[in-house]
Image (cartoon, rainbow, N blue to C red; front, side, top):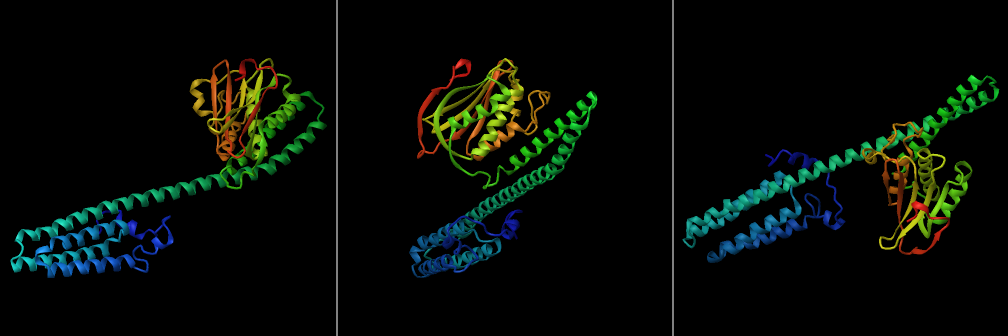
Length: 387
């Protein structure tokens, strides 16, 4: 009979532990049963002492029961062998105490020690089995969650990969049609088709990237000088955005990172800023070191529309947008930034005032061996976004 409903599940579950191999080899019912043999010999010696030393049976009697409780706590036998061992210990120690009572060296009340010690041991077994059942349940839940996460990631990868090819083909045909159509209305229509297909392609690419972020092989780390990375991105985005894209403080900091992934995250932050700023509102990129925390922050600040306070907790969710998608974004740019930041052991945060702009901060750890070099200071005028 099991001591609790979860005991059967615990006994049926395979033993999994991070303990050393020599310790696992001692666990019941694996061989060799060294601890069982040692405890059996120790108990036998104490049992002989009970029979031979009538006036000193209390000490060996308690040695047997205490050592049994300690051994069970260390080994957690299955229920059936535990009950057999408990019965044997009760019988032999009870017989020893009974022999002393028969000899007249002990009062009859001493016989109550046997069921009392047995009750203490049963209580220990019950609590131990409850703990094992809880650990088993937690392990099953963890394994189920891991399977669900793996299935979700695989689905995203498969879906994004399968969508990429037909979208690319359709986009190519649409661009060919655009060159042959002469009518103004037809040109506008095909422009809408091309725009939506391009958006679908960006969605599939970002879904694939987000899904792959949990893969250990996602990053190909190298030494990346962040101030140079910012400068390169400003140079690349300037033809599109114009001079309203500025640089603020650019501390000279080198990190271990995947240059390509980090660049994609920075592109997503810049794109997000462009979508939410007007033509006369600046976007400023900065690299701010924190020597105390051994970290560095890539800051993208804008003077655009800002984010409503109730939307701030949701903007890093997939397909979450602060404007309901009116800006034309994919809703995957900021989740991509978060995935890349977490893959690097960092994080991303936002500070925003509705109607007064936003400031996104992508934080990365800096290894001690790389260190934090002296800052290069401002590359251009600091303005209101400098720190």
